[in-house]
Length: 322
Length: 296
Image (cartoon, rainbow over all chains, first blue to last red; front, side, top):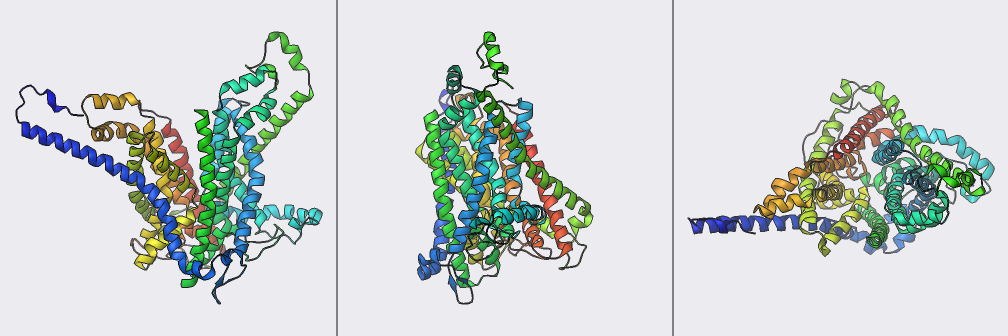
């Protein structure tokens, strides 16, 4: 990639050579600098796991896997276990998914299958994406002062008429796993909507045309052809949403009630791994910090598994499409 | 809305058939209505949050909010001046760390590494890292900065936010760089430019709007995060511009004021939420408008 060969008089060969070398080395240096920075991102990911793991070692060696099965969190006696937090994390995330998946998928279909002119659907798409941009601490604040008072009568109704179901079997509390689950639903909705919509939009047009040509109605085409064809992208979006829901911290810390117990009723306060870390880290002593880091490591591993699966599913789908 | 209004529909002779309301078309109506309703439901919380935050926060927007310290618990007056300054400082640290790594990493991904195994894994890591909970970034910064230096600090908060921003900056910048047409690079290379010259004088300037978008989006995202700051930047009730001391930030302040039982503090929380929300909405809407412009 040299330009100096065509000089007619070839005046100072040494100078040209030097300049050529300088440009060459600069170019090489640039190449490797950018490559190192690109690799730095992968290194950071690995570094996070290793660093948190190492710092949590005292707690890991002391509690081992019992940490996952114990329900005690006692800073005074220095005994720690996070079963209630694992339970709360999974239950609130599942409530979030149960609400958000049908909503998100329905909206994705509604926005992708040109039911609406673009000047209507574009603002709606944008509005739903904006929902993802709202800081979770603002959502938490709103949840405490607006959503919980709003939901109270609804919870009382659930308790009164569906109280025979263990899920609603206790006196309702505002700060509860159900409240957190509902808030998580709206926080993950944009993720499900935008990825599912992207998947549906990128499906090859002949699928749609073929189904229509066979006489299927638009909704038959959507339900029997397009959704099955885009299934892996949709599943990927749901997995990503699950990872997001499990890791959500501020809304959880503000709305779940931070109660260290397992209760079948979702109208009762609970705790999630993230809310435990957020609410306890500030005042934690040495041993408790190690235990909290251990909890963080568990959360990291859970979300990593979910995210990596999601990535693989989505990648695989994209490869098929190409 | 029947099938006949669609371009896919069969032809003019069949219009009669389409007008018959069969179970199938009724099902179609029902599903369209249902999903439309879903879309309406999804927008309700967004509207509710914006309206509530604006109505609670607007009466409190005055000069004091931006210049005064927060009042002691239970007392009214004061503002969030130190938290606003603190947020800017922590974000500045995060930008200084994450933007060079993110942008140059993206250059490698889009200019040199396209299609390579390494680029695949870097992209994969970026996507996975962006799914890592923000609080984990806080724990990471706690272990590498706070524990090493022995103190909570603005710098530790910046490191934590940099981890949050990095994948966003890298992936969004890469998307912008890929949009620069291949001919532009070939032209530069054909004139005898090295790859460094091509990238620094042609590709990067052309992609500048999308890089700016990437950075502002990442800043907007990080600016709203409280979780990574809870035990890195911690909090500070006083003015501080010291990088190596605890510092107050808007998002953390909103969290603490939301969960204490004093009315004046809760009002400040709403005001802080309004400031945060306005900044983030302006940036998100603005960046969307900017990305529409293309240089080539």
